[in-house]
Amino acid sequence: MNVRRRLIPLAAAAAALAALSACSTDSAAAGNTGKFDVVASFYPMAFLAERIGGDHVHVTSLTEPGQEPHDLEISAKQTAQLQESDAVLYLKNLQPSVDDAVNQSEIKTKIDAAGLTSLEKHGNEVGGHAAEHDDEHGEEAGGEDPHIWLDPVKYAEVAKGVGAAFEKADPDHAADYKANTAALVKKLDALNTRFENGLRNTDTKVFITTHAAFGYLAERYGLTEEAINGLDPESEPSADRVKDLERMAKADGVTTVFYETLVSDKTAKTIASDAGLKTDVLDPIEGITAKSRGKDYFSVQEANLKALQGALGAK
Image (cartoon, rainbow, N blue to C red; front, top):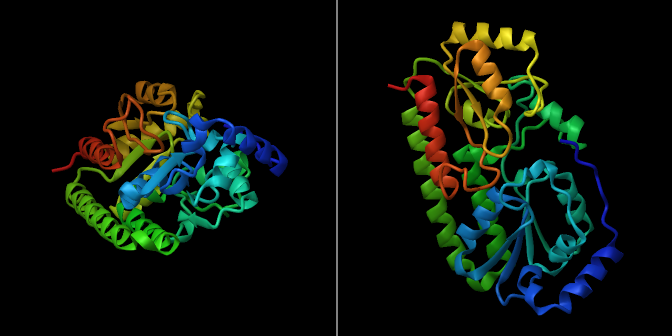
């Protein structure tokens, strides 16, 4: 996954905006919908905007369902959407092309989810995924793990910040935004409690993933994530790495290699076959597709909890 930094010239954005203005069928996607128009960078941000904004917002996601968000390149049309919208909600350092477009836009309300909670470095603990991101995606995150939404507690902190930003930017509907935020946070708190209770007593605390997205979740619930070090999800694991994982699996009682829905399961199945392990899905919830084990964040997280309970031997 090689993401190239691409600066979209403002002239190109202006040209695209003019084209959009001439086409009434695209007007809703480009802004001016009569609602509070929010552009979200990818699904976890769009989900927050929709839940908090309710009927008062029109949300457009820059990342299509099924698209790997790290690979996103912003088009001139999407840059024009930013210019026409009331707010943008994104996660800095996850999608460099989004960062570039946001920096160039004159949009008044720019909400960076990474600034609404504390980020941590999980690179050494989860197979160097953060460092891999820095190398492959040109990010300058200092090795900080961006996958905050997979921890319900951190996601709730972000939700509170987004709600406050909506209240300030669209004060006419502040009371509704406040109420919607409170309801969402309450539901995230309940999800956190289910994870805490569901993973408290398990045979093992170690799980293997092909995508090291679950560092925050693992830390929150006292687990250890073992990522497949230095491997692209599409590539074959090295013989040495398979042997290391096999030894670790036997020592720690690991039963399952997890893979995700937006990339191939080839690596997970290769390792599982060589090590005599099972495979299952642990979804990083970067997008919802027909393959997702649920229709929204909460239902997919419930499926993730069930998968972890099965793999870890929850009692």
